[in-house]
Amino acid sequence: MGKQSDIQAEYYWQTARGIDPSPVVPSIRNELKSVSHGKTLRASLYYRRQDIELVLQELVIEVCRRARRLGKQGRVVSVGLGETDGERAFRFGRQTTLAHATNLTHEIEAAVLRLFREYWQGLPVAFLYVSITQLTDDNVTQLTLFDDRARAYDLERATDAIKDRYGSAAIMKASSLQDAGVARERAGQIGGHYK
Image 1 (cartoon, rainbow, N blue to C red):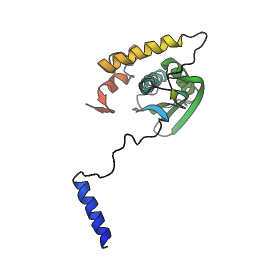
Image 2 (image 1 turned 60 degrees about the vertical axis):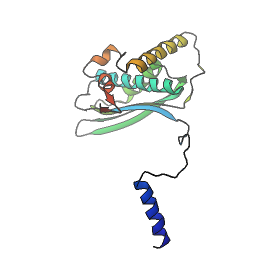
Image 3 (image 1 turned 45 degrees about the vertical axis):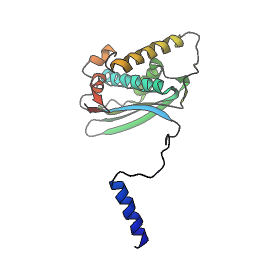
Image 4 (image 1 turned 60 degrees about the horizontal axis):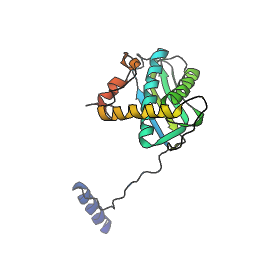
């Protein structure tokens, strides 16, 4: 082994003592490609359409909040889920392209619910995820003739500011207080784990 073992021994000695001679760089991340959020569920509890749609709405709220925090908006909306009744299991991941990039909750929610209603086969759901891709900066907004999108952005940014200051449970939809809602439970966790 000779010199090779000496090099390895030095490396292991440094690693054991927390010494890392590699240069410090400001960021090793590439450009952000998507913003997503998912949740694993107890399939035996999530078999009714309105309960599953409630969780999807909560996931959309979180995805949109993260996108606004990052200064991004997306044009492609994706939904995925796994469903099982104990004997059969199905998975699907579907996406749709919106007319314009957005991080507004109601616009992304409409696309997510449309995809879910079209492709869900009716079995209890074990996990869900929502994501937006084809990200652009949110400093450019597509205005529409009939919707006041600027006002909607202001309202959602104000809601985000309150949640940032007082916590995720400070403002939530009343529907999230139902037994099927997971937003209250998630607000009491750090990274999906209880504090």
